[in-house]
Length: 125
Image 1 (spheres, one colour):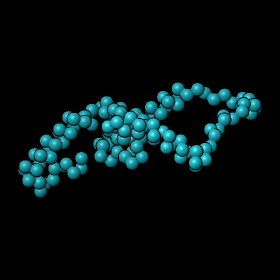
Image 2 (cartoon, rainbow, N blue to C red; image 1 turned 90 degrees about the vertical axis):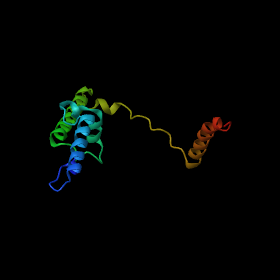
Image 3 (cartoon, rainbow, N blue to C red; image 1 turned 180 degrees about the horizontal axis):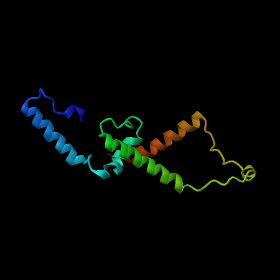
Image 4 (cartoon, rainbow, N blue to C red; image 1 turned 45 degrees about the vertical axis):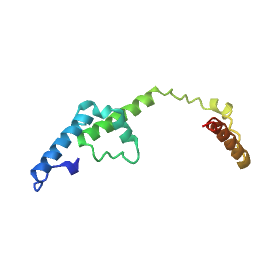
């Protein structure tokens, strides 16, 4: 909200507009509330590589959002089953089967078949 900061050379009308817009944004998105950091949109913003810096968030919200994501990661890590290190026990288990590779002709035919199935209902329109 750096662009909405009141400047000394702002006309009174512009200053009032900026003040009202900041108040409306704060009311609508409630970024100053304590529980805003745990909102799913804020969490998504932290996790998105293009917006993870959260430069437009107030510093207190940014830090709380990062802490919230760290707590989520800790909870997720704690809920994973613990790996057992038995040494040779894993060597006897066979690796999972790999999916069969299809050649380009088979893949093209499969794509055309699925496209034809989805287009058939549209023919009647």
